[in-house]
Length: 249
Image (cartoon, rainbow, N blue to C red):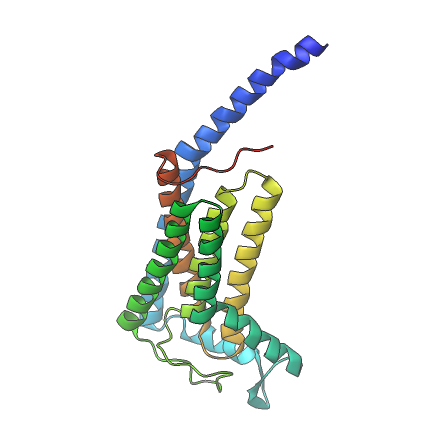
């Protein structure tokens, strides 16, 4: 019985190694490129629809549904919900994104994953540049249908908060998940990244500072950028340019 169990271990280990190579060299890159192309197409399609005014009616309907019909300056729900939404939207602010990115990069550097730390900084910094360029190019005015729940200073399309939260939190989640071999840890990190991204986008619509189409476009671009960073990370890891995940115990 012992001999059969011990003889099975190399077979299991070999199968596991084959599966890891497939994920790194075949499945992972293909999945990343498919996600990138799909979300990139979705963004440009949505941008075209917004330019033609096709989303205006739905945008107005959703924005008004989140307001008290008797007083459009009053979002639906209790007062604490509005304050909570302001707290949530702060997770997508420039300061918070920079702080979180710096904290994660510092942790990676201290754990001797210097190249991954540089990749994190490049991914989030590059995403901020893309966000700025897109806002300047489309230059869509902010919603004037309802009073804003907070001060805004830039153009509306795509939502910078939604886009940067997707870029930062999804990219960080993907890269950190790549560095840990345990599935439970991978799942937790990815769920937190996705949940944070969705909550930030919803808060922008609730506070009346973005049209829903702005937020949807921000999610598309941000997630597409995260997929691109995933693809780059896989290629660099395969070539040994960045550190491989820690071996399982």
